[in-house]
Length: 346
Image 1 (spheres, rainbow, N blue to C red):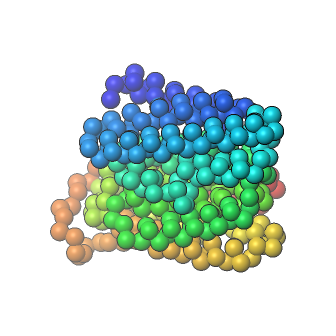
Image 2 (cartoon, rainbow, N blue to C red):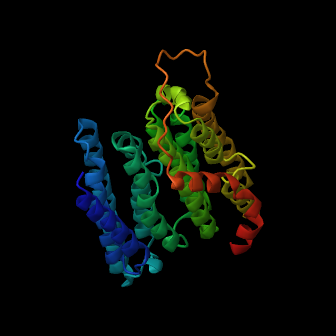
Image 3 (cartoon, helix red, strand yellow):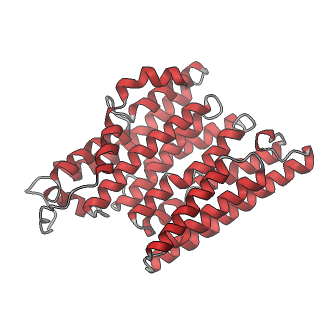
């Protein structure tokens, strides 16, 4: 793709995100979401492969529907209350429609079916943008309206996301699909706590974005899209694969890595809110995700020969890994010791 075109699309993504997260009026928030959608579509379909075109079409249809629902929800609220302010969403039907719209934008169950297919049809860097940057504006809208939304509905949607994200990722062999189901499961953790402590949702999102960025950039460096390729990639960059192993375990939420921190704080907050059964359920459901993270980690580092894959070994690459991957990988694995400082900020 032309570098100038890439610059335009990247600037538009930044502009759309900034407009949405800094707006108080529903129309400007909606305009920011639309700019974002239009900017990411060429990046999804740039390979001109039929699967990429299909992914872009699915993404456009889903996001257009969700944007229409956001607009419909805000108009219904304005009709009944005279308020266009995002934080003044009080009408019950508007709250319900908005919950559906944002769940559709994020890929939260039961509106998650489009996300794995779109991620599978996109290049790895575009997949990274879809998993992190594109989720930030809808999560901001979620945060600004969290006091108005139905906590019971959000809890059930969160548990369903954690269950489906873990369960449907079990039998996948495509790395991008596994990361898509991982994203759906993480969204469950963010949603379950949003009514009680929105700052925890934001912390969870930031740490998830860090760990996912490290994973996608590492996979992009070693050019891996399938588990069978991942099994032979350790000969290419042994140090990067070892780091990928730790980042994947961090994504799974194992102590003493960074990914354990948001899960620990969320379980603690749920217990304080007398929601111990929900905390137990979502903790048990995260074990499903742990299985496929362990499988990815096993394929990345522990499948030394002899093993069953009939594939040629890859040449050891001398191309230096980008410094950003190293920084993200370190942050993704070592933030747990500063958890007391983080918990004082919440």
